[in-house]
Every structure is written in C-alpha cells, then in structure tokens.
Image (cartoon, rainbow, N blue to C red; front, side, top):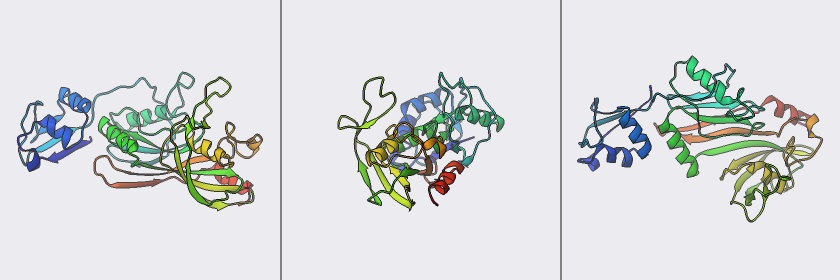
Length: 300
C-alpha cells in the first residue's frame, strides 16, 4: 500500500487540512475530494473532515490506493520491467506493440499486459500512462499506480523536468555532430497527409537536442533529447535535417524493409524525480536486437 505522509510545520498552524494538502503537499482539489469521500485522509492516525484544523507536529497521512476498475481485459504477457516501487512501474516496451487499447487494437496492448501483472501481484491499480510511444517505437514507458503519482509526474513533464532520451539510426552522416533543432511541427490538412507532420511556421515550437554517438559508412547512431514532446517529433526533425530514420516508411526512404521493418527509434533513457521521495531516478534500456542487427548491416 502506498501512503503519503508529512508532519505539519509551524507555517500551517491553524490552517484547515484541505489548505495543508493543497498548499504544502501540492495535491489537486480532485485528489483531495476523492480521498476525503473515501476516508483515506488521517491526522495522527484518525479520520478527519476537511474542516479539521491542523497544528504544528500533526502527522498527516493519505492512503493513495483507491478502489478502481478499468474496461481493459487483463492478458498474460512477458513484460520487461526496468523499475518498480509503490507508486510507479517502468517498462521497456517491445516494438510492434500498441500502448493502450483502441478500436483497432482491443487486445495485445501494453495496458492489457500491465493490468494482468497488477492483478497477478495483488496490486489494486489501474493503468495510468504517464508517457506513450508509437506502436513501432520501442523503449521506456512510465505507468503511475495511483492518482497522486500520475498528477506529480504529469506536472514534471509539463514543466520539462522529465528528461526523455532516444537513440535513432539515421541515413547518412550528419555534418554537425551535435546541435539543437528548433523547428515548428505542424499537421497539415488533407487525407493525402494522413498522420504525417511537417516542419512549418504554422506549427507548434518543437525542440530536439541531438548528438552523434557513432558514425558508419552511410549511417549515424544519434542520441536525441526532447525538450518538447510533439507527435513524431524526432522523425520529423531528422527528415528536416535530410537524415531520415532507417525503416521509417512515413518520413524516410523506400527499401529499408529488408534492413529493419520499423523505424529504428528507441526510447532508451528517462531521468526524473520519484513523485514521493523526490529521489532522482536515471533509468536506461539497452538497444533492442533489431537495431543492433541494423548497426551490423550498415557497417559496425
């Protein structure tokens, strides 16, 4: 069971418990309201109402687990768990896997597998995705186990305090081995474009920092650090530089299928603070086999 607790400081002497939870712990009104209704808020180990006046030294505790259900069918899967604690689960997603059920993909998604894992390990949690990846992009995904963790990490993402690092294998060799791409990304109208995005001044500001890790005869292994998180951002920016990602059928070249049947893009690194302890977590996932195989094909 995940519990958030803190002692009341002198600053909040005489405040209501609601004010303390909102101002000191930074909890949302929605989370406070639900926790109060479900009687999950304690002061000195006793249930209290939201009008309760706190005093210096009071121990405030919130049980973060709530009885919830989700319309997702649990499915047994082989999950690559990179990190887990009471509040979050971080998984290295395999390529070709959809993250969350859609009309076209009702089963076989990462969420189906995670929900089975929660039930199998007797964890009363639903799947709250903090981050997402395209179906054909592999790598690290954060799942929050409770509303507090989801709220805290979503805020970290909004404030650009959660670092997301990717590895991409691109066509050709970049002239500048390190730099920043600051180019707006726009989704044009028209069925002919489908899901494609383009660099266009009408779009949202999009920033990608990149660094060449290793060079080959006609390819570079590039690390990309996202400052913004637009759809297809790395794929669009690499094409904009004239170096599309291998296997990218939407933004790249034809004929890559024999080398790799998906875009060679892997979300290998996450750096963020634990929502409860504020400890810095630096998580990494090794390059998947198909991208290692591609490196050998292009000249490693």
